[in-house]
Amino acid sequence: MDVRTALLQGTKLLEDAGTAVPRLTAEVLLAHAMRRERVWLFGHPEQELAEVEWLHYGRYLHERLQGKPTQYITRRQEFYGREFRVTPDVLIPRPETEHVIEAALKIPAQRVLDIGAGSGAIAVTLALESGAEVYATEISPAAARVAAENARRLGARVALAVGDLLSAIASHSIDLLVSNPPYVPLREREGLQREVRDYEPHAALFAGESGFEVYRRIVADAPRVLRPGGWLVMELGFGTAGHVERLLENWREVRTEPDLAGIPRVIAARLPASSGG
Image (cartoon, rainbow, N blue to C red):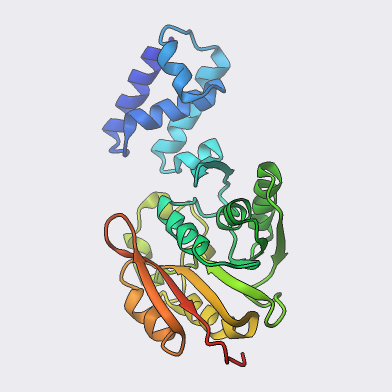
């Protein structure tokens, strides 16, 4: 079987199953099976697949048809122009989270802490883009290993600590806190896409019945960790902006920033300079 035929068959299977972007998915999976870049396929449509390549491609298609996200099959996802390794131990980095990076880069900071590092996408990107001293916490040892590997592979200096949110961080030591916290209410679990519900780590998705549990904990402990006048930047879930703004009612310069769809996606707030923590 050649590349052209493999792509046609794979696309048809995915399309019939209602998989999003079936042609692109087939291209990504075939390129992964052949250990080639996707663009290579376009110039070699008559290339015959080796038996092992066909077997891998068939397995990858089967996994995708069962709902496994493409990123967990290929073990990679691009974020802010860099390729990150991802595994089922970490949340797949989303393009929306790049708004967190953009908001954070507007704030001068020497010491930055990423709360709940996951794959390390935020921490690694900020370390490379800002040159700041970057720390990260992650409650999952397996996720922390993925973040550490991404930092090493991309040449970012990130100090990782395994622990719950801010518990491992010294008082008044950080200029900027950033986080993409879990914010999906448990009651919405069954309404999620199966790719998210059945495959992504629940600890990185769900935050109690309300979806605000982790926001509350971060906001409550942030004054202990931040230096007076320090900043907190967090990603917002859909419909969470008003509630999180109320959590920050005693902070200064509270502002939200929209994503490309106009939905409030990031909130930033400054701790009062006189805060005692």
